[in-house]
Image (cartoon, rainbow, N blue to C red; front, top):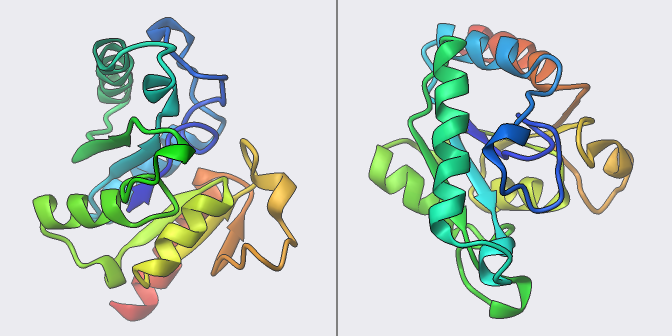
Length: 178
């Protein structure tokens, strides 16, 4: 399961640089635990243009990600990896969502089938990235997601209120195909 970070797992904060400001969204930890119970791996793929904009450096972002991992670990949740794009939209890189560079790198390094994966996020870029690699996509209504529900240009496979509801739907999908 490939997950967006801000607005999907944790509360959206403008350019989060303070590890102490990490706050889980309602249902997020419960949903992550359910996904793990199904035997699915969890990978975070996130755009972090604040680094490219010079708001803070990769060392500060690493502190945020270490704190996120620690908080999740305390809740019994282990991430397989966190992949981030430090570039700005103007950089035109291949790793910034909706481009598939990061998810392809994660699949290559962690050895998973992109077409058999699920992508969960709160923005059109998350859904488009997932669609490009033929993954099953979920738009969550948390974060910015509610703004895009019903937007015909976004076109996720599923819409869910939050990560917990998305995990329950994935459980039904996996159960039906397994």
